[in-house]
Length: 181
Image (tube, rainbow, N blue to C red; front, side, top):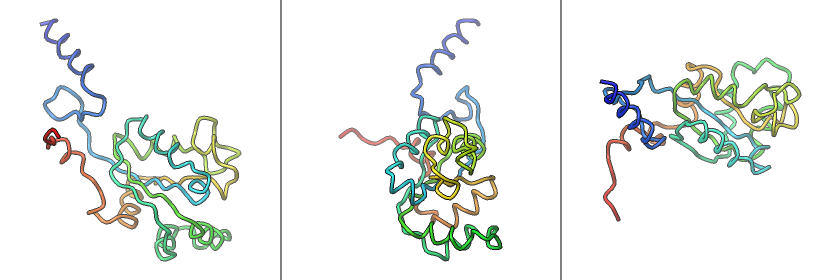
């Protein structure tokens, strides 16, 4: 019996890190959670997109959608609807529409909460070293990246920024192997 578990553990260790664990595969299963992450105009201008992507990939999350766009003010108004009464709102909309944004959807276990920890505090002076904002942010109004703050918020933001046809389903990709070239 001990050898059975030893072999099963060895198979899990030798499995490629990106291979999904499916029901019945001996590994944990969990619901698919997604979040929106957007590199803001200052992050794009400073060429930090690759650094942001690298951190999420190294954490083991899967990129399921990505696009670079000049965000229409109508999308920004809906995205930041809860901040419309704040005095900084007009400057925020001007800034977010001042240059390209790289919007991404990441998928993984507990991705919403984990991504918020990875990006750090909104105020760069409070953001811990090792977080994206702690390492790259220069000011509270130039804090490099946005990430959804809740699962519900992520669902709303993803639907606002992406059409379903722009998002990849890793389950579909994992079940179909490409023929060798």
